[in-house]
Length: 142
Image 1 (tube, rainbow, N blue to C red):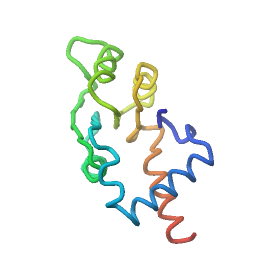
Image 2: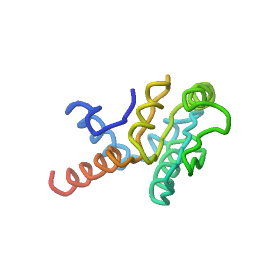
Image 3: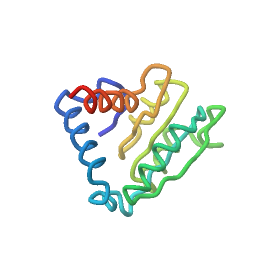
Image 4: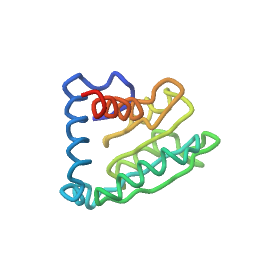
């Protein structure tokens, strides 16, 4: 399953994510190995300290490993197509987070991927931030 846009999740899925997030925050030790032996690659076409730190820290706290890869300038690989680069990611990592200039790039990666793709932000969507905002509202407003 990918999270490419704000509309990829049903209402029930959003509630499940928020409930699990609340549980993880309340009992972090219980989830310390939930991503053990899993690798996240974070692709950044646009630099962002907050996005990098939040994904990297989250993956580490869940027992996984995070790899940072800059694709500034829009060049994912030197000689391969975007789709060929994604085929390699399918073999070596378990999940991809991308912060890209265009929603189209995220959609192309999603179409070529057999592993989950998370949109870390584009010009069109910011689904992770929206989920974080919903969690904050739930925590403070119920």
